[in-house]
Image 1 (cartoon, rainbow, N blue to C red):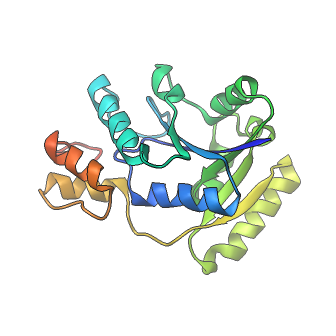
Image 2 (image 1 turned 120 degrees about the vertical axis):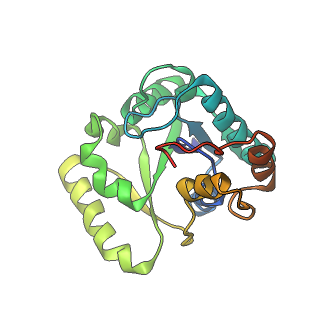
Length: 207
């Protein structure tokens, strides 16, 4: 059975933290591939959703993943043109790729917010959830939440140990707006792309 990790997000821009999380999932759970899904129209974020902005985000994900043979960019959510919901995406993938075990990768904050997601119960039968734990102090709380979701909804959730990196897309956008370097926060190709395309140089509510 093929084992595929799923990393969704706006990736505005994709950064080292995203890539390290994908790498840790790949190694820890012996995955065959990790798919990065740029979200075209996320229902939960005030992302810039113009076609040009989406094209830039997609281009940066491609640059960040193109040299890693087991990383793959998948444009399913970017192309559907409407709000993307995890339950719909994972349900569709299970129909398109029978015989594949999917591992949906998320952060600790998302683990505790899952009951607020649209039709969240429909997610659990479609995948094993990998919840990133960034430091030991969160371990007990996360274990309690995992046990709760398993007991109440039958969710299959595993802890994913990940490095603690205080990097966010918001910080990167702010630095780019201030003409500060974003090197070491994003791959070199992405840093060059941001400069060459003059991205994040205009103030916006998303910064």
